[in-house]
Image (tube, rainbow, N blue to C red; front, side, top):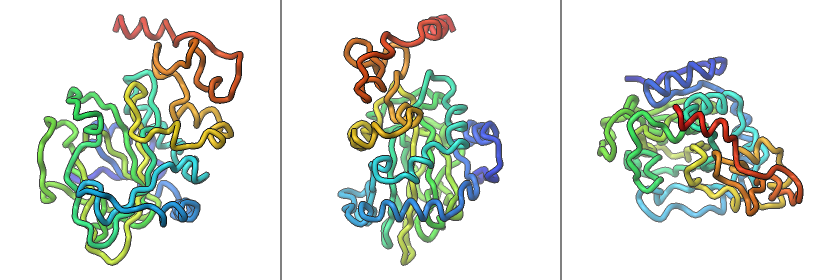
Length: 285
């Protein structure tokens, strides 16, 4: 089965439906490639300073640069792209809220072999989530063209419905080839992996993932983005980063204070737990 493909004008509900059916989808040229070029320019000092991985999974010729919200204004825009957030909101509609899980530029260098085929949700200590219960909705933005030769992400459409801890070979996958500015969506349950880079250039991808708010973030957003920068960011972005209650009794600070009030140093503000009516409705459901 081929990866479903959509134009940039596609409705998020249609994209979400494809993710439910196949576990992955590509949105062609969701932004102009110059937007990703701008992000690379802003991140250049950190990209150059990042050391390659230390094991086969991370990649000995692959560099992974995170902390993007504190380092790039363009990345702050991309993580809040309305098509992305509306799609994520639809895919994860079964939970009270979702939050940013990680932000990372993945630069795969020439000669890097293919990555082990895996599920991103294995990061949660390999917990076997029930089939069909998605805890992540992820994106990879093509900062450069993604081709089979330079290591385009390899996916197995429909594999999000398969049993856990399966083992696959590259022959079982297909490359998610796409032009710069395009975006690959995939769920946390989809089996996938970075392809081998047999070209003479670096493949740059911007990996931004979202997860349900009651699971720990892969990238600690509270420490990755310095407080002095976080305090200057808008409330909506801060809530997406995790400065918000994750459910009825999750995420408050000390005496039931709202996380945003604590971050901004406000002594008076929202206190208490979350939405009791909504919590009781979930109990009754």
